[in-house]
Image 1 (cartoon, one colour):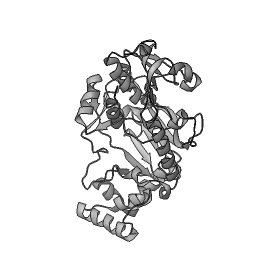
Image 2: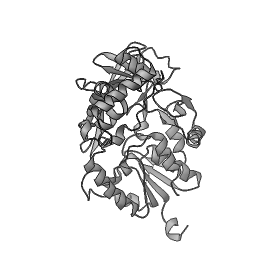
Image 3: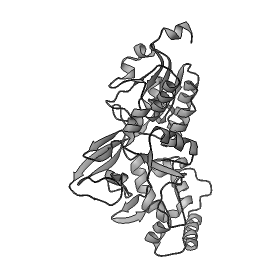
Image 4: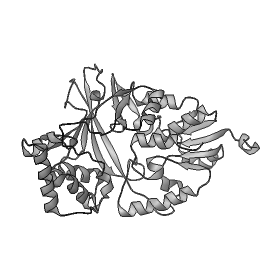
Length: 370
């Protein structure tokens, strides 16, 4: 290390105590580096943060289920804390009628009546042919090419347009390409080999990752940017990429979520952890009943959270990058600028303006050159 590096108190300043920043912090401290992590929130973990409600772990910022087919990533997260197996089997509610997710033989029989896999395939093929799109250019076309028009209008269109605040015909087809479609009676939402939630919740997982690093909460990087940057040789930045560059190309757009909690003096409200509401008239997209994430939960009450998607504005939390033409082009400009910025590592959903699942973020953080 150079004399100049030794004059600074830290080797790394990590902006954001979420998943990407915490994994990098862990790797850096394990390598003997001096690490400072700052976060503008009053807690660690970013959107993984959980709150205890008398024995029920509330996923404060929406349901988070870790899933991957990458054995090395699964083994690595389990080397930090044990992940308890959990199979996500959500249910869709369309105007009071319930359907199994992901789209499988249960769904097809609920929608069309009892049928064989061959009959279900033929039904979807017929609807694809009648619709006529061969090269999907938007989400609507992509969805219909996957599941036909009946499922699209019942279980995809309303939910998706509420989630993104835009017509499905305006959204990029890639948003729905990973949607599982099965011709078996299998309600396991994810195709991944490994699925689970940390024993004890995500707070314990993040706490372990940040051991050995100095953590400062309620610290807005942009309020003290010059002073903070002067403290370290390298910066790991996980916030909004456009804000880092002072919106020089214009502001990117996001979707945000509003959460409405309700405590219910009953042990079971809806019988499932996640219920999606797929009609346009219901203002929320889903209800999370948190106790069902933990089979060992013995609390005498339950807590549900309704999720309301909203347009992002300054001061609200940016959750989802928007994959339309304008924002995709703008993000490319920012990513090119980030690639040319020396001494700064940009990582995570906001800093790359990409939709990532948790296992993808872990893998990218494990591959960062330190």
